[in-house]
Length: 225
Ligand SMILES: *Cc1c(COP(=O)(O)O)cnc(C)c1O
Image (cartoon, rainbow, N blue to C red; front, side):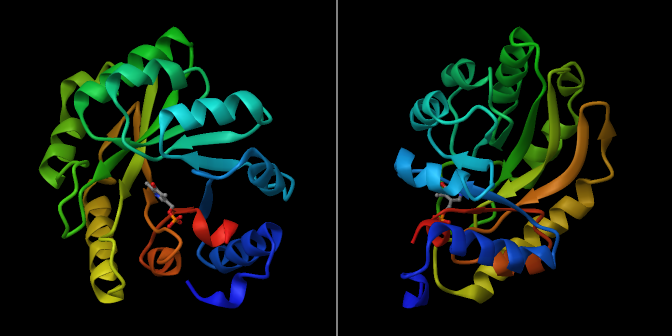
């Protein structure tokens, strides 16, 4: 990150980012992980209400304290045994990486009489990462007969994390590969599968992602710096 934003406020940062994204029609999930309630409150007061957290524990603490009209997105790895804690309120889960997890989200959403939006996390980075599906695994979930019975989830798209490096050529290729995969699968249609979202892009690369067809970016540090 450059220093030129360091004197800007949260309100100025988010306004700048939203303005940049406007041309692409890309939505912004403001990532609030590690941020204090006071900082998030300041963000909330700008009128932005779509927030993302990567850990269940932190998400629960913040959900309790902050206003209830916030749309919460879980963007980090989710363990099956923790789904029940967030199912009463979570809007979208970006990190679905197994059929078993999807089944549990459906079960807990049903208990809460809700429908939870889900994105399949696709492995696109060159580096070793623990989480995410490869394209064949994602396809087998989308085409599985089990998924058709999951009436309390809606699979709305895919999510990807680029390699954590400064090489924009590599990052761009990774985003392109996710967009290509999305274009391949987007015609799959079932009552609970409606593929319209590509969640890719973070503080360092959200504009590259938007240019490559991202519909949702997940930006944290560029807002709070
Ligand atoms: C932290 C995080 C982000 C945002 O990262 P920044 O570099 O702070 O914008 C996006 N996605 C996931 C999954 C994250 O954990």
